[in-house]
Amino acid sequence: MTTDSRARRRNLLLITSDQHNPAFMSYLGHRDVQTPALDDLAAQGTVFTNAYCTSPICVPSRASMVTGRYVHETGHWDNAAPYTGIPRSWGHALGEAGYQVTTIGKLHYRDVGDDTGFPDQRLAMHVHLGGDLRGVSLRPQGEVPDREGKARPLLRVGSGETEYTRFDRAVATAAVKFLEDPPLEPWGLTVSFVAPHFPLIAPEDFYQLYDPSELTLPSPDSGAWDHPAIDVFKRAFGLSDVFTDQEKRSALRAYLALCSYLDSLIGRVLDALSASGQASNTLVVYTSDHGESAGAHGLWFKHLMNDESVGVPLIVAGPGVSIGQVVTTPVSHVDLFPTFLEGAGLARDDSLPGISLLDDSDQSDRAVMAEYHANGSTAASFMLRHGRYKYIEYVGERPQLFNLESDPDEMVDLARDPGHADVLADCARRLRDFCDPDEVDALAKADQARRVEQAGGLEAAAAVQIPYTPVPENVASELQ
Image (cartoon, rainbow, N blue to C red; front, side, top):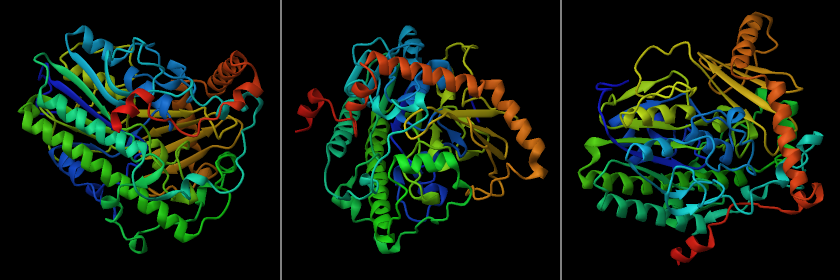
């Protein structure tokens, strides 16, 4: 995808969001969402339309984003197993090469004091009270905590300000300040926003961009997602109850508004980069830690292997990057580390499973995978994407197989079609080139059981309920 893959010592700007459905971009033809800043970035660079996180939940995904390794390699299984600096990150690599490495915003690691390779953390948001151990406390016993009634986050929607919207505004302001007076040496800057993550409360001017009566609701048909593992998830997250169209429209309106709010903040950062005169020597990457189901198949939140949840937006722009190109080859967050190494003119680390997104060689036979070991599941699930097919394996349950070329909405499960038996077997074999699903499931559960015991047992672990990650007190004081 490069026109000059030998460019050296580029500055690196990684912009991330939280829970951004990969289809909610106007440049991809979404019928409702307005994302002019991301549209401009996409027009100036290369868009990857089949990009995936390594796990559709924050902590494991963010650990993979910085280490370039899959979850079963890092052991960051869930939101109570935050990154502490092991394995080494691309921040370590860049810092050792003389880059000033700075982060602004949400990281969701363990603590600012850990040697994560990011020594200059501004407005840092990390896990709260060790993370959500309650959500995985029953997994080793094959159970999940059930939630009674409708999923409350979908009913608490509207316009206004929250600590997250204020936090994101402060993150953008800090990023602009950084770019107005950038370091003399090469720099690597991460700007990490929380939007469009719940709560679904959006600033008024963005909320008013969308008329709920005109929004296109996704089909409520669960289709192929009528599956035992999905039933467990829906029960655990209060999604078994039926939501009215009005409730769904209200939630969708607020989610769209947060997408546009995020876009406006990204626009501020990109405008500051342009004004700094350094855009011509800065590699820009935009992605999200995972997606959001946003009503598809009657589902909400992340946690699952449908493309709305496990897929992520991914745009790369800057020196040496092809302009206006669309890449359909499957790619992954594990590719960020190799990309940043090449962008900085550093040698490739052959121990990493990913490839540089600046590599324009033929990758048509490539497969990527994702895995899930966290709340709302009683056993691990694994996704493999290869060519037109997506294969999902649930430990202890039947698999799923989709042809995303002919069935992009994932409505037809081909796993029990005799005509696709060879494809199913090939995908299962390719998944095992990455890991043994049963073995990894056992490892994750053993580690979760160990941490529950370390916390004082099941009752003590279940008592610590963390419905969301608050803005740290030292950061909150700066938002007043």
